[in-house]
Amino acid sequence: MDPLAERQRERLVAQFSAANTFGEVAKEYIDKMVAEGRAVATTSKANWLLEQLSPISQRSIAELTPVDVLAALKRIEARGKHETARRCRSFASRVFRYAAATGRAENDPTAILRGALVAPKVTHHSAIIEPEAFGELLRSIDAYSGNAITRLAMQISPHVMTRPGELRQAEWSEVNAEKAVWTIPPERMKMRRPHAIPLSRQVLHYFAELHSLTGPTGFMFPAFHTSRRPMSENTINQAFRRMGYGTGEITAHGLRTTASTLLNESGKWSPDAIERSLAHADANVIRGTYNRGFYWEERVAMHQWWSDYLDQLRANHTLAKRA
Image 1 (cartoon, rainbow, N blue to C red):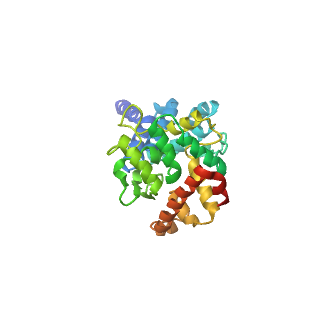
Image 2 (image 1 turned 90 degrees about the horizontal axis):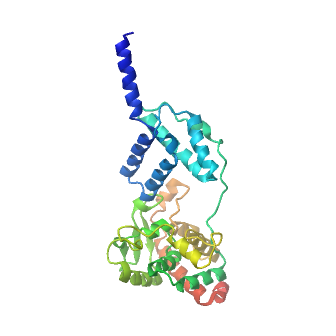
Image 3 (image 1 turned 45 degrees about the vertical axis):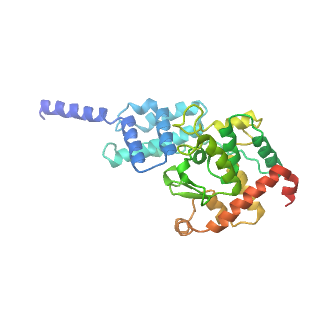
């Protein structure tokens, strides 16, 4: 063996390893996600998970062992962040598999770590599902004395049944008031497909008030200090806390649970129409694709009925409960 050639080879291998750290490969993987049109919220979460894995970010991805990754995950777990540790393991696994597919790693060392972390407790989004109590919440929202845009976000959210991120990132260009429809583009949807929402008379009224504050272009719910960014993800939940509702009582996401529960309990609407309005993915892919355009007329009627029902709860919740 030529000693000079061997030293050159070792130097090249070292340079290659240094240029392919876990952090660099992870950033490349995230760039790929962006190019594929993944939702901003998804790529932002990926960047945040990469920050949590900083102890291994500067290590050569080809040299990382299961013990190295587990040590980084255990540091997160030690702070009581069991769900975060689980998500970091899943993200790291995707990065390792991408590295293997592009010739920079041999395998996925996280594969054998399943079961090595503390399983997080399953938690559900807090929600009010009693009609009388929900009527009280609606009246409290109407009386909210804080920022008017925050109040309108809370007033609109129960009607449209969107995820909090889909609402706060809404743009005026997505709304067609004449046709009474709000169409969310696929890159902002969890399932990466466009979602059309029928707008009731009540929602159109709220949108008209909101338009006078933030229209006609840009974000419908801008941040407090700049119109270039949408409202913070914590704004609505913080408003609920100021109104006296605890984290175990109601969350912005929990409003979807309320809508799902009460609409299903009404017995007036098909479960498929309700699921379509909640933008849930069909467990059967073929069935979901086939049914994608269905239920529109039923959903239009359902959204108007739901808004009328919310008005009843707000005005006279006892009567609405009997109805």
